[in-house]
Image (cartoon, rainbow, N blue to C red; front, side, top):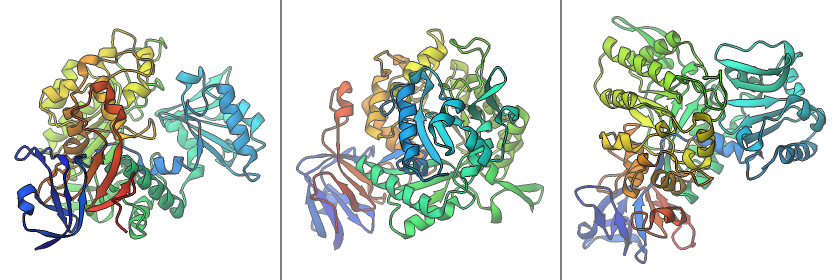
Length: 549
C-alpha cells in the first residue's frame, strides 16, 4: 500500500485516550490512516523526519471573527500598541486621512478608552479628517465613534437630533452628540459601509488564512455573518465559497448566520411555522472546509464598554448596570423559534443579568420542544455566579469564554467589577470540574488571536499589569490544549473528525518548538509554531523545509 505522507521521529500528543502518544503518523487523502506500527511496510510519496519535534492536533478557535480579522489587516490600527494616547490616536487618524483620496472613508479599529482615558470625539475628528468621513470601532466591537461627515453620508444631517434605537445609546454632552454610538446605535452609521465588496471579503479571508496558518490555527468558528449588525452583507456565505474556490481560504470555517438573516418560511411541517434561511437550511449544512454552524443571537454588550447587562451597577460607573440589546420577550422568542426549527443556538451573554434571561429562554425552548443534545452555546459568559454555572451545566449548554481576554482586558475587568465581583469573571475551572467540554477561543480581533498566547492566559490568568484575575479558575496546560482542540470541535458537533490525532480524523496538526505540556506555565507563551498542516498539506513552515509545492 502507498499513502501520501508519513511524518516520523515526532513526539505526538494525540489527545486520544486509546493511544495518548505516538512517534509517526500517516496521511492519505487528507485524513490520518495510521500511527506508529500501523504504518509498518507502508510506502509514502513524501516522508518528513521531524527531528523529535512536538506535534499536537490543529488549534481550533471556537469564537473568532475570521473575516473581520482579515479586513482589519488593511484598515487603520488604533490598538494601544499603535496609538497609546489620545493625541497619538488623533495623529494617526489625521495622517491616514491625509493619505486618502478626497471623500474616502477613514475606518480604524481597536481603540480602548480604558487605556486612552476617554473616547475620541466627533468634533476632534472633524478637525483632523480634511472633510473625509471617519468611523472608529472600539476594541470590543460594541461601540464606535463617527464624525459629522460619516453621519451625513449615512443619511443624518444633524447628529444632535438623532434618537438612539432600542438596545443602543448615543453619547451626548450638554445635548450635543460626541459621535459615540453604542451597541444597536452603531447601525445608524455602519450601514453606509455595507455591503462590503465580495473581492474585499475574499482578500480578507486570504489574509486571515495566512495569519492563521502561521499561528497553528487550522479551524475557526466565525460568530456572525450575513446580518445587518454583524457581517459584511447578505452574500457573506458566497464570499467564503469563492475564497475556497480560489484557493485562498486555507483554514476550515464554521460560520454562524446572524439572527437577523433568518426570516419566516411559512408552514414547513404539521404544527411548525418555519424560521430560518431559504429552503429550510440550518445548522450543519456544508463540508469540511465551510459549513453553517449555530445561529448567532445578541443579548447584551461589552464588559469593558460597560454595556453588558449586569445584576448591579459597574464599580466605576454608579448608576450604570448596562442594558439588554433586545427586549427579554423578543430575545426568548428568537431563541425558542430557532430551537424549534432545528438550529443550534449561540447567544452572546456577558453580563450576569443577561445570562439569566438567556438561561430562562433555553430552558423554555426545551420545555416547548424537547431536543436531545441540542448543544446550545453561550458566547463569553463574562460574569457568572455559582448558581448560573450550575444551571449551564445542568442544561447541557456549551459556555464559550475567552482566554486572551484575561491578559488583554483583565485590568479593565478589575476596574469595572471591583474586588467584590472579579472572582466571577470568565470562569473555566468551574466548568471543567463539572464535566463540561470547554472550548478555546479569543474573539479576535477584539483581542489578538494567537492560540498559544490564549492558552497561556487560560493557565496563568494574569492581567497585562500582572494582577491575578480569578486565579482559582485557571486550567492546566493539558486542559487548555484540550479546549483548543477537542473542546472547540465539540462546540460545533465536529468531534468525530477534528480535535484528536487518530485514524480516520482530518490530518490537521501543528509542529511546535517545545512541548506545551512540559514547559513551565509561565513559558507557554514562548512556544513557537514551526509548521502547520491542514488536510495533509503543510501550509506553513517557519523553517522552509516542509511546505509542499
